[in-house]
Amino acid sequence: MHHWSVMTWNSVAIGDGANSTLLITTPQLAFENEFLLNGLLGIAALHVQYLTPGSDPVRKQIDIYAQKALTGFREALPEIRPGTSQYESAMVMAVLLVLLYSLNSTFEENEIMAVQWLVLYGGLQTIFKLDPVPKSELLSIYPLFQRELSELKVKPVIPRILLSMVQEIHALDPEYDQLEYYCNTLDVLGMLFAGLKQDGVGEKLSIRIVSWCSFVSQEFTNLAKEKRPRALIILAYYMMFLKLVKLWWLEGIAERDVVAIAGVVGPTWLSYLKVPLQAIAISDEEEIARLILT
Image (tube, rainbow, N blue to C red; front, side, top):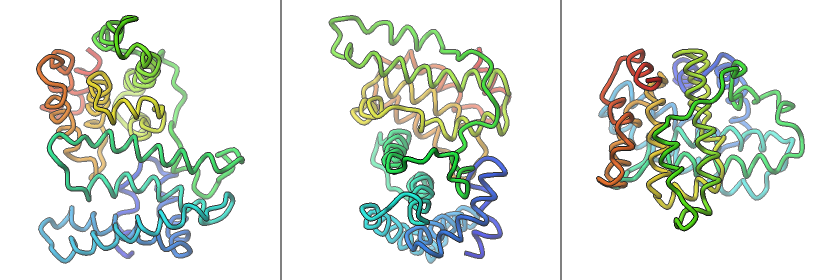
């Protein structure tokens, strides 16, 4: 908990409001709700491991905390009531599970992290639906759920190659019934292109990128879970934006996912992945931004 309070709290989210919530409000909630406390301790242990790789005792701590956090969270869910500290703790835990899962998972070949994020964000939506109160009134934890720092004034932009990929879905195509969900997700992806064009690389864009999965529908999530090539290609374009976010727990995920997606979709679809594959080979942020906007 000392490590969380000194070093971890301001390194897992974007924005001063979110960081303040993680420093003050979240530990207060955690002392009242054990599953969230174990979640914080697990993430702090992950951060220690990141800073001092190869530490076996820390590795054991991570496994213990993560298991306790997940078990306690699942047991608490049926009893959660809106307006309680347990409810707010569950909302925070649902977000932190994304981080905990990202760094504490053993992946099989071609498993894709972005798909798992979509599933986890779907769980967060389930908790949101319990509450009839407008989310802006959840003042103690609201900054953690802020999805933009500035109004988007630039029209969403969608790469022509992705538009072509979706336009190829004709009336007799097996995916014709899913066309609406592909189009909706492309509109959401277009917000990132517009955000980059409007604000450039920085905090305003980063918060849009980190919260992007929360805009995606359950229907598209199902397509991604089924590893439909078009859905995975859209996710590859999202993952290249992730290269522009400077958070320790996101390091290397974009590279791994884009390569995994290329392996899953196969040679037939590789022409659609040209830009994401180029982006993951670049380390300079401004160069990646120029490539994305080309």
